Amino acid sequence: MKNICYESTSKCNLACPYCISSDNGTLIQDNYQAIINFIGKLHPERVVIGGGEPLLDPLLKEKIQMLIDKYQENGREPYISLSTSGACEISEDMWQFLKERIQCFDISIPSLNSDTYKLMRGKDFLNQALINTKKAVEYGLNVRISIVMTKQNVSELADILMFAERIKANSVRVGRYFPFRNANAVRDIYELEETEVQQIIQDKVEKT
Image 1 (cartoon, rainbow, N blue to C red):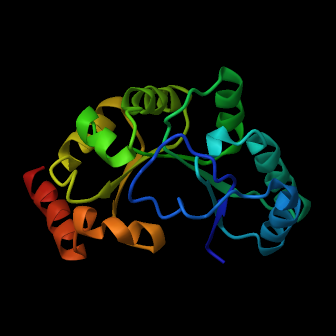
Image 2 (cartoon, one colour):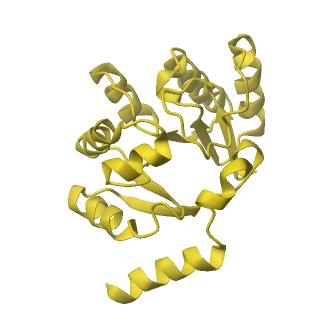
Image 3 (cartoon, rainbow, N blue to C red):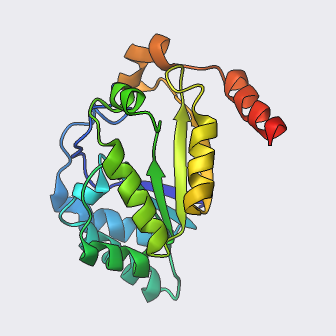
């Protein structure tokens, strides 16, 4: 198995109108040991820990360490990617923990424009997200910036790419908004066709 996405918490401090997880309800934490045991038995090549916002999960450290231990019991090392908005303060202790235990710090930033960011995120945590992105680079984490292309940020890929290059992020992932579940209600406001996203990427490649 290549990948498993583990939603560690449904808690989130944003209000993205296009969020595909906003209708999940409240996760019950009592069974996380069983879930991590199951992931350890499957031992996929990559485990993506997301949410909600995983950095708001008070059990995040415990879950990551348990996952590592389960892999190591079978002589394996997991590839753990933390998928975050970066829209919260991160303690120095947590930075050190992440530096030693995860293989990818995947931070989603839809825009460097505060108005567009607030439109897409429901709240303006852009400055905090940028601070955390820079800190992740400074701590030596493998930093990937993810941008979901929509009608609202269609012209902002170049700014994200330049920002990533300036702070020396490791990579940028360009994705497309998918109108799944709750996010289907706003598809007319956000959805781009795959061909449109591909053209945006191609235009940027041709200009560099």
